[in-house]
Image (cartoon, rainbow, N blue to C red; front, top):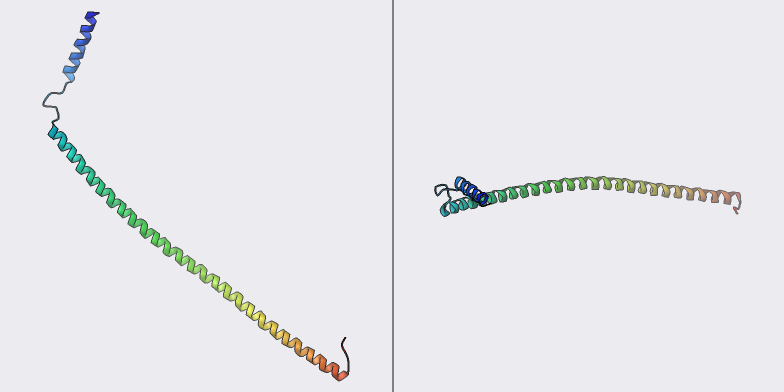
Length: 127
């Protein structure tokens, strides 16, 4: 049992010795600080790049929305013009019908007046 424990300890020490980092391979505080500064400056650059991309996308979306708004306004004006044209046609038709109705009414009155004159001349009474 003691032999196995010593053997295990020897294996662990050998593993640590083989895989240990030497002083030459170790990273110093200054190197870590330098890497940290590089990462920070890289992140600032990425942040600025993202900000400019977002501004570009915002401007692009704004111009698309203005285009869509102008297109919609144009379509609405077209629909309004077509609607007004139909309404004008309807009003014209209505006016024509009123004129025809007045003409027919005048004609009927003239015919009734003529009938009355004829009946008076013939001495005929309508019941």
